[in-house]
Amino acid sequence: MTAEYDWDGDWSAIVDAGERKIFEDELPRELCPEHVLKGIAATALGRRRRRDDVLFLLADGRCAQVHLTWRREDDPLWPDTQVYESFDAWKSVPIEDR
Image 1 (tube, rainbow, N blue to C red):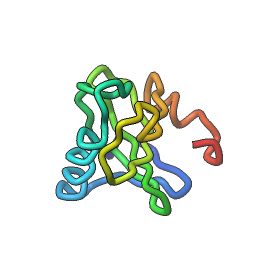
Image 2 (cartoon, one colour; image 1 turned 90 degrees about the vertical axis):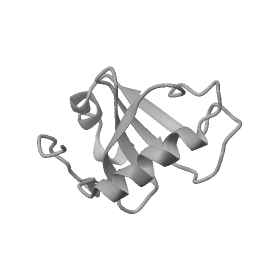
Image 3 (cartoon, rainbow, N blue to C red; image 1 turned 30 degrees about the horizontal axis):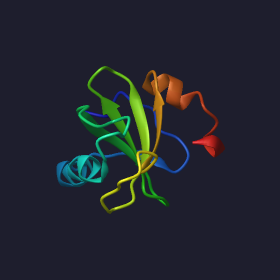
């Protein structure tokens, strides 16, 4: 699934289906009704090893970098989320800024 993506820095593909499911189940659990990703289907593509950051492919082709908190949130600013028009748009951001 993620073979076509070119990862860099401490980001890597999520290749294990069980690991992918953990992140995909956790994301909607954390989102309050006002969160930007609420109700949007998301597939976990990659993760940043030293942090709780996951890159999700959204149903419309955009990507979202999400810093999971591992708890239910009631503030729409959490989990912290940056949405990009595509994987390439995400990748064009310098490593130290994503």
